[in-house]
Image (cartoon, rainbow, N blue to C red; front, side):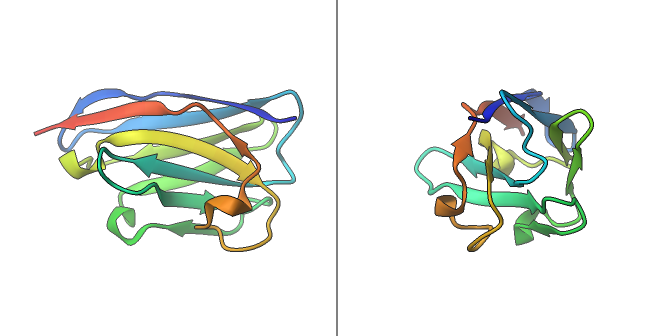
Length: 124
């Protein structure tokens, strides 16, 4: 089992920044792809960013490119999502997920383990 815990969410003004952390316990997720998903009220859950097992490959939702950066620190067993220039439309519950690198990174079925989520609210 891989237990994932997100932290770093909160309330921030438009244009501000937040850094989300996804920490794994139970066992390492160094051999897993990790993705950050978000879901806003009335909207489908969507992949925001994903990072490969090695950390050398990343992908991003078009609307966050240039603003968000995903990274991982295998030694600390943690994946981060740095969010800059936040917009009100970024408001959502953000969840991290891990799974083997099979299938599409944007497909929720590619992930076996999920965190409980952390709320990000961006005020205008």
